[in-house]
Length: 415
Image (cartoon, rainbow, N blue to C red; front, side, top):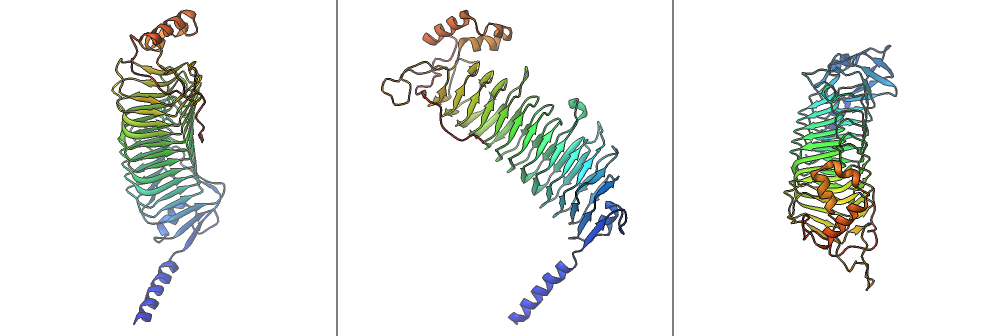
């Protein structure tokens, strides 16, 4: 009986695999369009699209399929609307180039949309001349890997996002390159998302923008030369590690904006040449550890309502202002950081300065209230008032100090 059961089981597997076919699409094949191949395919089939240009849009996938594009396989939507919509589980799209997505002010047309689907894989895609790139809607347990999204956005109101997740769960977004769109990567109400090894640059607004999304991981990404860097809002249990925030310049720009973020960690990141490295508002119980702040206008701006945060073992190199505060109250801890502008001494040679360091300058307080005074940054008068405030704090938080400033930079890996 047991032998019969095994035989029946393997016969079932063989018959299930046996029904899986490969359908070819090309100008000389039985199927000349992707739509017709999808319509004829059985669940589990593979559709192999040979090189060429296929002028199609509104391609719907409502069954488990694998679609693979040969090199130089292009789907041209001719700016007529959305190009591919997936509404089935277990769908793989690999190796296609998708161009000319329609633009609409009432509908978010995407090169590729996934709706209420699981176990999807979108990889090695090239998306160009688009409105939205990849749009995941109430999808979960999927992967978006090694895709290139190249937009040509000029104005925010007429452009979409590169990779968007809305009400998604347990999705991996890895190894993608996104340029020239509104927000490189956008998340809303999406939990347990891992975003890693992506390059998001030269986008109109944010390299990464997410709201109301919890238990997410962002690591080893590069966010460079975006309109306003990265914005993280109204979320908790966020881990941001090993990212680089570089050259996000502008009058209202920053490397990283944290607004209403709680119980999170910002570790081993690199903030280089941003107007503001990190702009913090209403964010509590966050560990800032082993980060580098180098050549920023402001390394860190604390705008109030921030409590029980810990800043430890960070390096502050040659920033115009290391820390900016707009309040006289401080409930945050600064300990064992390296400050390039620290001028204290170390008589016992233990690597820790004998004199506490006050990172908030009076001039930063003045600039916050009257931005035009920034033109006085290098004047002797400013040096005098900063020194007087350091000796006897009146306007800046008197308990905001690093009691153990390091004499040498912290040695740690920056990705």
